[in-house]
Amino acid sequence: MAAIQYPAFFLPAKISASGMTAQRMRLEVAAANIANAHTTRTEAGEPYRRRDVVFASVLEESLARYGEPAPTGVEVQEIVVDPRPFRRVYNPGHPDADAQGYVLMPNVDIPMEMVNLISASRSYEANVKVLRAFRQMVEEALQIARG
Image (cartoon, rainbow, N blue to C red; front, top):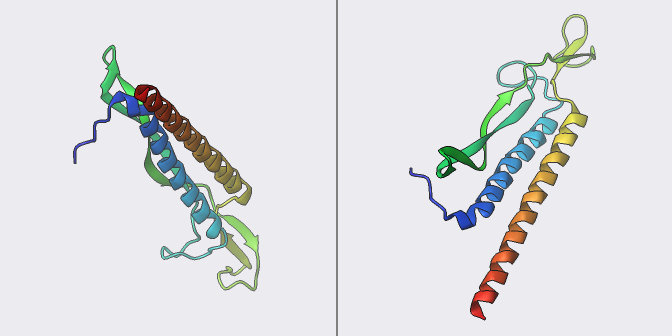
């Protein structure tokens, strides 16, 4: 599928929309991490492993100056699994406890996930503000054109 070519006039809206999409994914991944913070057994037979979102700049040659691609947004490049080790918690009554009474718990750090949620939420809000400002500028330009 060919990429849609937008006039340069709409570039701020396109960049903000891509940022909103990327931050929404970041919010979803952080929420899933929090929801699984106590999941000690997955289909793989081990505790849940924290996931994180990796972003990448979107470059378009059509808007390039001096032969260099111009940044035109952001996209989710991939969702990676955090390789940090699991936490060991002493809980001998847990069904997943080993012979010594320790349970492997997910490598999710709730305070860090809360920071990610707040950061993604603020970034999303900033992109919404850019879209609102862009819309207001377009409306004012149309009013000027009408006379």
